[in-house]
Structures are given as structure tokens and as C-alpha cells.
Length: 105
Image (cartoon, rainbow, N blue to C red):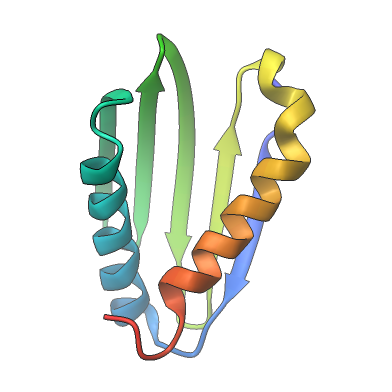
């Protein structure tokens, strides 16, 4: 495994609304990319989700923790995807901010 990627995104939504938006975003991603993902699981327990995605026989695991004022995402990539870490961090940060933007529902 490569070093885990950790991204935090601040918000002012409160934990419940942030979690609702994240869950909706995950479901949208599952639907939009269903032809690519052979597996896309998000298992929520309170404010924590374990996410597992398999595409092209490659597995990526992530953990999401939703707090009152921020979301923390930790992604574990296979070692051979390590060169893409910087791009993945940017994409996670951008998508997280987009998902939590005020006014989106």
C-alpha cells in the first residue's frame, strides 16, 4: 500500500446535513460510474463510513468521518497508484467542497 491520503474539508452545515450530502454524493457516484465499478460499497455506522470501490479488478478503500465543522477522508491506494496521489488529493478536495457547498441539495 502507498501512504494513505488524508484530506479534510471544512464546512458550516452541521454533521447531519454534511453526512446527508455526502451520502447523496456517494450514491450519485455509484450510479454515474456503475459501468466502471464492479463494487461500490459505503457502509455507514453513525458518522463514519467505510467505502470500498473495485474497478478493473483494483480495490481502493476509504474511510469518511463527518464532524460538525469538517469531513475527514482517508484513502488507501494500492502502491502502484502512488504516483497519482497529488492528483487524487486535488480531486478529493474539489469534489468534497463541491458536495458540501451551501445551496446544493
